[in-house]
Image (cartoon, rainbow, N blue to C red; front, side):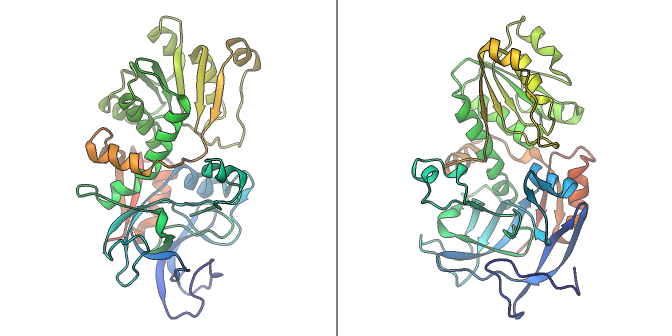
Length: 360
């Protein structure tokens, strides 16, 4: 975007004195790296030097389709909500974090005042500001970003920026397993072995599941699932009756972009079982067979991001109960962000998670 002007996002310097490099999504399949205004922290915010950004499934929808449901790209937007950053020198935060501290950043800013926030569901806040979301909440695919101090979580020694960025999807996986109310020695099917699905696999294993089966059409993702502890893997859910002797699994954790995945989950789960649906279908449509879900008396829950999960995500990653490194299959500098999006969106070269890195 060099040589072009873009409307300044909320909180950014409009005087033109301070600039930064960023990757802007201009439309479907159109990511350009160029210069834009550096953000200025508002009261209570901290200026951050971004170090690593993971490309997520929602970023893929914005790139391929231009939006998710009613959230459509209008003006050029900086995507990226999975990220780790360093606190910029001279910007001391109210929580006492030192300049240079490497932190994972919660991308959500719920209002804290609505009915849902007050009752402990900030992930459902209808007024939430979420990094990298239309129309004007710019994300972290840039040299600098800002965030409130209560969104910053220091990374312990041994967790680098790339793995710190993956704490956000790990938080989604933790929230999904929380919603499942998984009990020790229950059986689990994970539908979809992208980054979220592979993290669900590991969290379910840590939560005490007896058997964890994984289904995905891509052989390289099945290989990753097997390496990360899946009991069995297959390219189709037709294997589930064979694995469970016709009973079905206790819980299905779904993390795909396919509208038909919910129906497959309903067929695979036992009578009285639970379906946890985390995927964002490309057609913005979920198809469920009414007779099946009614006759089985299924409990169905949808995953909306996460809530209060960063401390547990950090503990799981730092202790080794969850492995993040195998999920990072591709690394790109900011200058190659367009290539990173193309590889991620079209699932090239065995990609699971592409991370854009910005060294200090």
